[in-house]
Length: 434
Ligand code: AMP
Image (cartoon, rainbow, N blue to C red; front, side):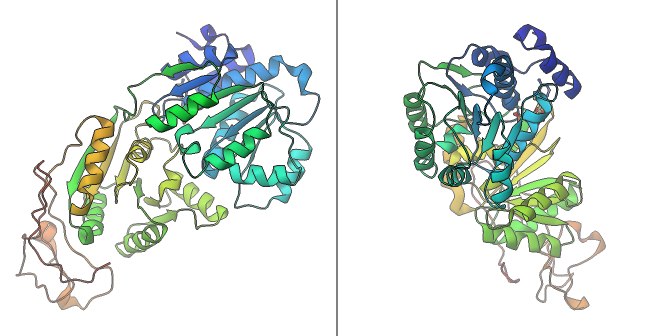
């Protein structure tokens, strides 16, 4: 199947060719004709498989064909995303796929000044990509007219329809015309969300290009059993020993992300944090530095799990397992994108065993637990020379910040995951706790 067989216009085919795509991905093969037909769509596709083009290409085509209705300034397609980064990314994709058409795409999200957004909306756009909160602010200020929206897309629909977002989504839907096309795209759907989604859709076409909730096959997954307070040392070992150049690390809390970033920096690994407490400028900067290889490690909370497309990202680490098992699929979906391989490593402490089981239930397969390598405990604070961990042949030894002499090597803190999942760490952590 080629792009031209999908019924796309020459302008869109040219833009796709410019991107270097040889053929449509499976979700595109199914979604493009479905969206072109005007029907509502409920699509489940793995992350990184090209679902953005799956809905944006046919939307561009439909809006372009319907140029007669473009007389006003009001958006005719609305794409809602859960995060600012994803909104910016989808809008970029839309501009690049639509570069040979005279359609305008604009994005709005919180964390940045609202006034430039008000001015830009005044000059009009055809496709508006938005996060819900800022869109409602703009609607309240009458800066955006949503009454001309013909197509509504919920990207990462499961997140958009969960408890946090659903009140905003309901309010936004009230501002839209009743007659419209609804498109729901996500890698994962829980049963509750699927029920809700189906009530929102009218006679939907259901598209599922991969087994439900399956992570992308190209991602090699493994888990290490490790004591909570030793995770950072194992992480430093994995990065340094494996000579990782680019790793995205997920923590559960913003505070935890900041702390780990400092600890990695202390160990000589260049790192930046990205989470909801950072200003939008700081988030953009951290992501850019990471994409350009200026930092090795990007430490993120769930905010970065959705949708971010980082070219050929080789490593993802779950420093802490997510509380919501489906989030695991999104996190590891940051690697293995667009056909490239990748690896996803989870550091699992004993209190996270039940979270691991929940994830494996969603995946419908176990995540291999592999033996934990021997790693050094190296405190980042400067230490007197006599207290430094052994050098040279000590690569597999564990040092300790307090009085742990070179001759007193202990492998007792080797943590071994045998598949049974039990941590056999016997050593005592005498060093500073993080
Ligand atoms: P998405 O799932 O939409 O975030 O897309 C993931 C990545 O796949 C992006 O880098 C796209 O540029 C790329 N991509 C999308 N469609 C294709 C295609 N048909 N062939 C090759 N790469 C693609």
